[in-house]
Amino acid sequence: MQVLEKAFGYITRQYEERLQVLVFEQNTVGAGIQIPKGTVEEGETPLEAVMREMVEETGLTNLIVQGLIAQDYAEHYSGALQKRYFYHLTSDDPRQHWQHNPTGLNEANLQFTLYWMDEEHAVKLAPGHGDYLYRIFSSVTTER
Image (cartoon, rainbow, N blue to C red; front, side, top):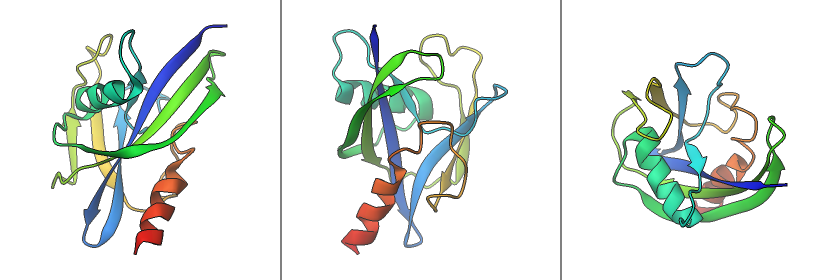
């Protein structure tokens, strides 16, 4: 069985003394609310992939990688086995929400509406996207 590597990014910011996580919805029915993510391309490390994917999917270029918070294997709903890497990144972007047309392959007709959420269970994320979100919120709570 072929394993497909995926790099996920929990992008956070501090806003009015609250931690917020970037999520998006796309103009495709049934896609759900997601965090930015994408495929690790051949010859690319997971870290390189997450940086590339974050720019492609959000338009944010001023991100700081805080670290890898988890990696695992999970079966995608399509039946494919994925090796997933979850990174924590930070941003100081002041926008509350914006629209972005992703620049990756096969994304020509997509439009993403990005916005910040500030509670772990504020929205229901697409399957697999929130698997390690608790680590983001608990690590910040612990640091205070």
